[in-house]
Length: 638
Image 1 (tube, rainbow, N blue to C red):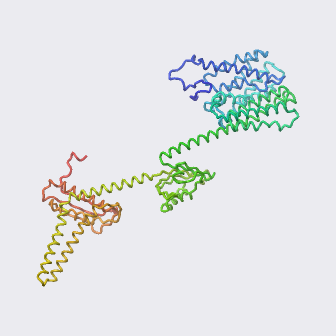
Image 2 (cartoon, rainbow, N blue to C red):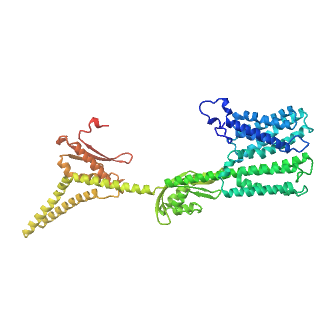
Image 3 (cartoon, rainbow, N blue to C red):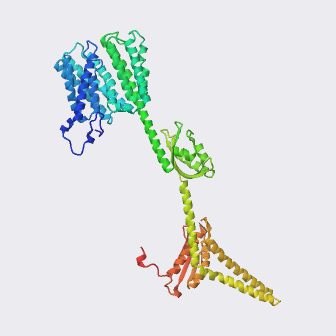
């Protein structure tokens, strides 16, 4: 059993506390109230059933007690069914005694009535989740077959047998079976949906609807009662039989606009008025014998009721499905707006498309603009359009998932960065059925990554500037040597010119030395400028041997000042690598600086650094820096 509260206020098993309640607690005020209501309704239903009997047959055209009992069982927990049956028996006994029915026949009829209710309620409750509602086609179909057809079919055999055994009435076994069968089918289709739908939240539902719907319901009720009165009370028995379907538009109106509640109420009103009119000799169902009139009106009302209940169930199920879908779309839109997500789907078979509001805002699509691959690609940046189109085509051909990052060029000229992920879904025939996907706007993330990269580059440059600051003395000494040589050669040249007869060969050598020293100083300055300037971090083909030589040129004076010997083992014909040269210089400079600091306690004669480059079997270029320092202490290895 499901742990759901019943519409009649009786809690299901799951609503009890962990402590087991005793059976005596079933008899609380709620159960007593429900039992009393069932007894009263059963009594009134039996009186109505006798009033709707077409004499001389002992079976009513519409027998409400069985349906009232069935509805009560559908609305209450199984654990109190015995209370419901026990409460109905005194009412059954009272009304039957008033009609001078023999005691044995009274008991037999109650047994058959209870069997019908138990069969119908048991099947429906087993196949339909609690609470029982008529708002789905499946639920209505289960009710119509098991409760409205199978239960009366099986119990009618028992009921007819009881009538024959007790020799009650003048009809044969099969006459009683036929009248009883159709009577109970009609009662189940007419009364059970009405009681179940309106005993739940039917009255509360009236308080929730708008005033305009209340006015519409009033007009529907007036129109339905008026047309029913005309058809079943005012029309002559010889009137055209097509006029019997004049109430059909009002019945459809009730089902379409008010669902199962409206349909069940309209069917109930139609049934009661039609049977009452025929029983009193009015309308088109009063021209033949009582048995023929009863069968005709029963079949007419059954045929009208079943499609109407099914229609109401389909409409209400579709309405709830649309509401659920709309709420889901609203939740998706809310999530999309919070996370800059765009959801979309394109159904190629139904030629339908949908995109969340956030997605239409991101892509600048109109509210009713139909989605297509061409429309999407028109928004992609021209430089990314071919790559995106190829990725989509590959996913379409293989029915696989695609994911790509691209730029979106909006009609207003704004460029945004997006990541899209989607998948093509196939139908049963192997064709493409639907495309579903999601896109996330990562423009802010891309801009943040750009700012972070710029900040990192600036920090790296400042680190290089700091390294240059630490090497200021060495760099000054390194620059001082070529500059001093240039000054000396310039002074020597002036002396030669002062002698009046300069030696041109010697003068040419002086100029060559000046040019060489100038190039040497220029290389040092260029290396410093290249090392500390702002860089965009672009990768380019780099020869690592040249990087090693440039760094050693920067550290030449510092290495001499620290009495450190440097040995280079540079592999010839080293392949170039795709890297950022400034970053490689920074790494190599840091390694050499660390080596110099690590050898401070090493004797001067043993200070040695070995820099080597080589190319391994995997075409990778390796650079290693080894020093003769003492290494890390054991306690710092972790």
